[in-house]
Image 1 (spheres, chains in turn green, brown):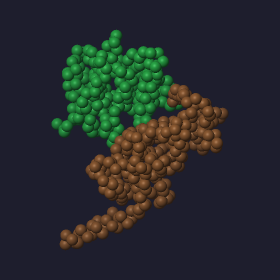
Image 2 (cartoon, one colour; image 1 turned 90 degrees about the horizontal axis):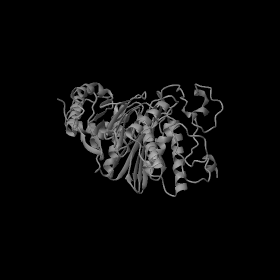
Image 3 (cartoon, rainbow over the protein chains, first blue to last red; image 1 turned 90 degrees about the vertical axis):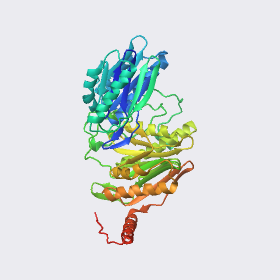
Image 4 (cartoon, rainbow over the protein chains, first blue to last red; image 1 turned 60 degrees about the vertical axis):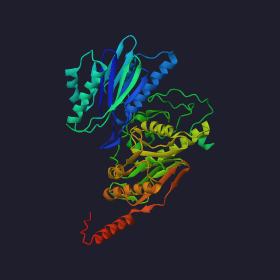
Length: 200
Length: 292
């Protein structure tokens, strides 16, 4: 029902998530933000079981901030991704497993942009582009076809729009709006919300 | 004092430890430590007898308790925010599968003068958590000298509920805080916490949404808002078998909440029938009424 997508460029990462918070057949909220800011240059996108998403994401968010407070410097995206993976894996083997699918996107001074895909079984993979949700089945092939490592920002946004139009056309569920953010060396930028109109 | 003893409060400094979800121990030194009856104390539904000796307040409450039957949320509650504050409305039917257990239940419970909770789901659980929430908010007020903000109390409730996700309830909290204006939160026992301007919860909620979605605006005046809320509950109780009897309406402003008299929806039904009949007569033709 929910959808996350991330595209990595040469010096940026573009991420988008849908805005619907649903409860069985009802849309409870149409402007839910599924992205959590872990630090100035790291975003965590989180979907999955209803309460688990916010609880797990906020837990990771606060612990990353605690690390910064204690040690005086921030975790890199790679370290944050591995920390998240370890926590998710530990909880899976406990009595309170969290069922969440995550994308972690960040920009590192030394390593550059990074996009990390993590699924609910706590498998972590660094990927040039990734998507979660039923929508991923429809859009991964589009990403496969048109993605290039040297995409500019505008080209990446166009690719994202292609994916969202495909969802609008073929996905049976209505996802009327998507939050879009871009991370580069300057930090996290909010781009305008994408709202696909009408059916083709 | 009794309240102090029950809550395990000791005179400790205000610094909190970082509590991870799975490692909260029964340590009485943390001010945010609550006494919550753990599922272990409800023996009949335990499916695992391994943990016979546990400290009473530890986190093994995460043992999943098997439910004897699925619980349904037979109710219609709704709340929305507008320029004059927050309106909360609910029906008054408490159902137990096919039986109307109580036709005069109260589903909207005031926590304090500026905070209401509308409840849906297991009645016993809602009653318990409403009291626990009221206690925790009052303790916060005593400890810190100011009332806990609405966002804070929503977060507190959702964190308390998450650890006991076996319970099955939704709460819409309709508060107004003098500082921040009207706020409305939807909190569910599975851990969901959403802030919004219009929520409806329960088996009758789709019907209520149908009426509310077209009409709720920020610029409604008080009369319009109240009649809209009443109409939404009426339509939901008309169609939903598990909602019915009367409607409770609360209006919260910056000065506090005020409660309207409980209205029997049967009379509303008869009034509407008369209106329809009158309209038919006025049009001068015989109308064939279809009854459901």
